[in-house]
Amino acid sequence: MIQDREKLSRLHAELDPSRRIDIGALLRGAEEAIGEERFDDADAILSGALIVDPNLSTTWRLIGHLAEERGELEDAERAYRTAMELGHDEGATLELARLLMSIARFEESEALLVWLVTESESPQLSRTAEDLLQLIENRRRRLS
Image: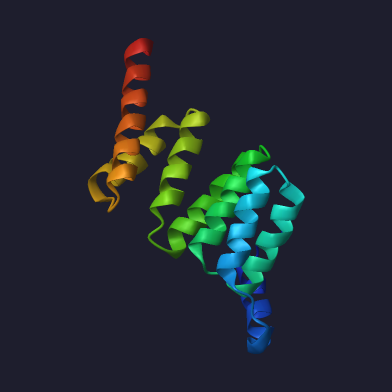
């Protein structure tokens, strides 16, 4: 998958506007492929989505999800962080917090979760973040 944002921007600029693809359809296709564990298909679709719009946070969040499903945790972390840099992507923030918890980087995860609890516009995301914070706290109690 092409992840060089400068190269992606050049490819995007070279696209013929009349041939631009519906990015929403691409992302739905990628989500479906990931859900069906057709990871190579998802990779190809997401590569195309990056060419269509390399600055869409949702694309990068899905790239992170795909990388995480493949066990490529460093790539997943980079993709989630890119999604967060590109836009107010609370979903990417939550996914990154979960990923960091899974690799025992609890302090970093906790900071993201606290931000979600206090700043999220989604009550559901806020509740999920609170639940994950409680898991971190329970783990601390068991270890002390």
